[in-house]
Amino acid sequence: MSEETGKPPSKKREAARAAGAGLVLLTIAVMVWITGLVDYLSLDNFAKLRGWIEGFGALAPIVFVAMYAVAVLAFLPATPLTLLAGLVFGAVWGALWTWIGAMIGATLAFLVGRYATRGLVESWREENERVRRLDEGVERHGWRMLLITRLVPAFPFSLQNYAYGLTKIPLGTYVLLTGVCIVPGAAVYTFAGGSLAAARENLTRTLLYLGIAAVLFVLISLAPRWIGKKNG
Image (cartoon, rainbow, N blue to C red; front, side):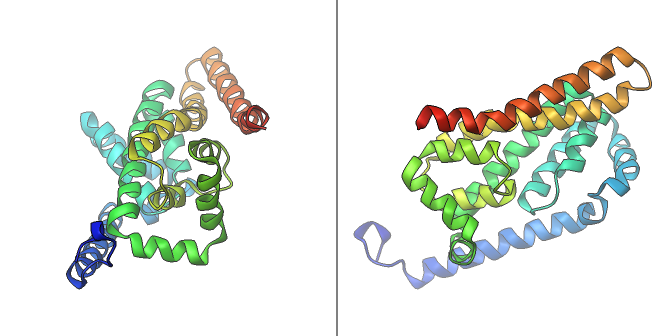
C-alpha cells in the first residue's frame, strides 16, 4: 500500500519514520551533551563561552555556526549566543554567522518536522494552542502568517520551525521568508554585543552600534502593524 493511492502508510514505513524520529532526537541530544550547551547557554557563563569559542582560532566561526544550529534544533536559548557573536566577531560578521547558524537550524527543524518526527510534532498541535493557531493562521493567510510570526515573538522561534513542517508552506517559501525575517533580529543583538566590544576602543562606534540596534528594534516592533494595515 502507498500514500499516493490514498491508503494509510504501511507498518514498515511507520516503523521507519519512528526509527528516523528516534535517531534525530538522539543525535540532537548527543550533540547538546558533547558541546555542553545546556550548561553554557546563559548570560552567567558569558565569559566562559566566549573564551571557549575564541580558543578555536580560525575555526571559531564554524564552531559557532554549528553551535547555533544545534541550539535552534534543541529549543535552547539563542539570545546569549547572538550577543556573543557581536562580542567575539564584531557586529557585521557576528550578524552573518548568526544568520547562517539560525538558517541551518531552522531549515533542519522544518525538514525534521515534515518528514522525520511528523507524528511527534502533530501531537504538539493537538496539545499546544500556539501550534494550532499557527496552523490555522497558515490556512487562512498563507505565507503572510510566516512573515508575521517571524517578526513577532509571540511564537517561540524553535517551535515555529518544527510546526511549519506540518503546514502546506513550500520549503522554498519557508527558507526565503525565514532568511529575510531573521536578519533584523540577528542584527539587533549582534550590534548590541558589538557595542560591548567597541566600548573599550571607540565611543563613537559604540554609540553607532547601539543606535542601529535601537532603530532595528523599533522597525521590528512596527512591522507587524504595517503588514496588518496593508492586508486589512
